[in-house]
Image 1 (spheres, rainbow, N blue to C red):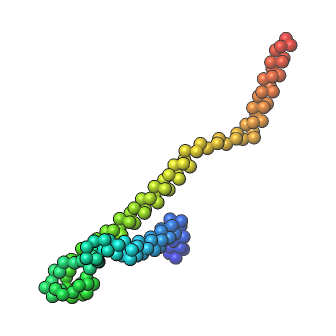
Image 2 (cartoon, rainbow, N blue to C red):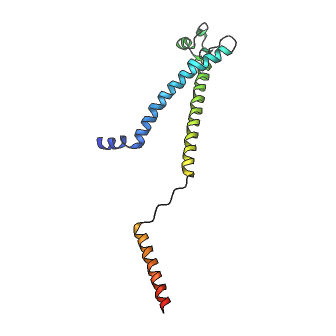
Image 3 (cartoon, rainbow, N blue to C red):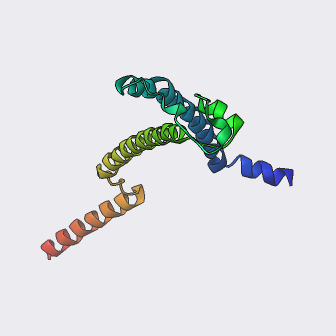
Length: 148
């Protein structure tokens, strides 16, 4: 059973998937930081009142009334955090756009490689030798016919 698992785990597809998951997780953290630490503060500064979207919520419990931070409100009771959702949605859109650009670039590279016509392989040596023998025999027969 261990050998079978080892064979499965060491196949190229499983290793490629593992690398993709690790890189994807790291990329997700970078995008989250980009949105949370750079984009959303700029959007908040542009909008009137320095909006902080991460703390936008609608209280669904009566005991949440005076909590300005969404994280604190969630600890006290039910809250509908649409600001956190908007931030997550922006994260998704950035990741989706980055993947779109990446896949588009890879497809362009693949298309240019596919368009380049492959040079035909030279014929095998035996075939070349047989063609030469044929040509010599044809010349010899023509010469014999001319003598007659």
